[in-house]
Length: 317
Image 1 (spheres, rainbow, N blue to C red):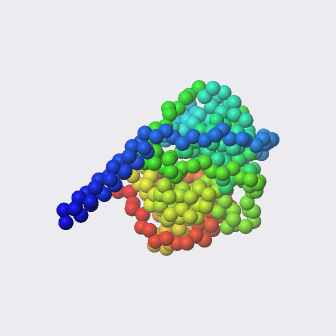
Image 2 (image 1 turned 135 degrees about the vertical axis):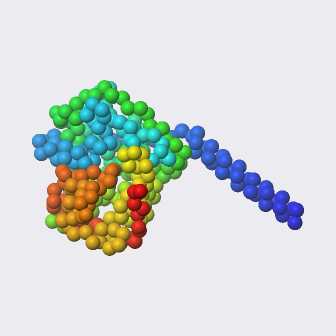
């Protein structure tokens, strides 16, 4: 009996030792490194139409995270990221050669937006990757960043370096990886196919599933439908006061999702930030007035097609 207890103690102690070593490795190991990528050359013509579309997309996709105190895309602290992951700062993406992207080529920007890898091989883990966005969509964003828009003119602001907490380091070591560069062109969606267009907007371009699925840690960027609790809500977010709130259930469940929403009610919510009862949507959900009604209708049609999930999301106190 005593021998068995001694063996059990040794095994338990060994497990604790291994767990401690693993934790120490995660805490103190350097971030993974990658070879500087071989970046294919592309040519982007910065037409007025692309610049205008890029500005529209950026107003919903880029400005929120990258707008600094100078009202340019000069970077700032990302207050919405739960501190369990660390403290994070967005990059300066103005045309400054020293502090921004002024020395980057269009090809380097395109590669970075696809994969998350900078031209020197460093990985921007906190930055979303856009493997599903069409080539034309990325060309528009890059054209906007090259334009004479005041928001992208050079800024000397240099954001602080992001710091990962233990959970962030764990994800960086084992979960967060660069996306593969596509081996063929990524076409524009067929806007006459409402479901395909809605899926592209919700999953590909604006990544709505990222906040509205169960957790950032279990989301799948390459196959969003494989994300845990896909559009079922409950992901932990922060409000403007730093309090924990939970993302809404956007599945067509009648009781806990948006199953009872009409198309017009969804337009009112997504474009203007107003629920059917007239109350405003809570931060960090903002009005998306730059979306067209047809885009919102397509997103609504796609959300109506996803499997309903019964998940009563806790309401803000």
